[in-house]
Image (cartoon, rainbow, N blue to C red; front, side, top):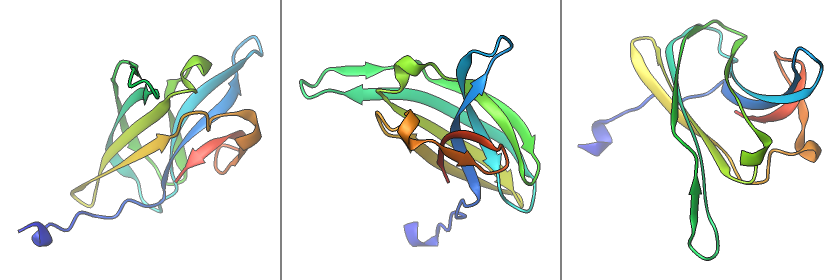
Length: 135
C-alpha cells in the first residue's frame, strides 16, 4: 500500500534567512521563500516554529505560526516573516506546502541551531542579498 504512494519531489524551492535594512537603515532579518521553478506555485502555505532540547533534556520552543502566501511566480519570492536574532540558537523549521499541477507538494526546511550567523552568509540568488539559504 505504501509503495503505491508516489509523492512529488520538491525541488527548486528555497527558504532563506536574509539580512535586510529597515526604514531607518538598521539591520533586521527576514525569512523569504524563493521559487526557482519555471512555473508558478499556487496556494503556498508555510508553518514556522523554533525548538531545541538541551543536554539536560529541557525543551525550548516558540509558538507555531502559519502563513498563507498565495501564489509565487517563477523566479519570484515572498517574505514569510521577520525573525529575531534571539531565536538563532534554536532549530528554526519552515514547513512549506503548495499546489503544482493539481498535486500537493511539501517539504521541511530546518535551519539548525547556530547556523544563522555572519560567517555563513552568502549572496542569495534572485534576492541579491546576504543570507543563509536551504534549497
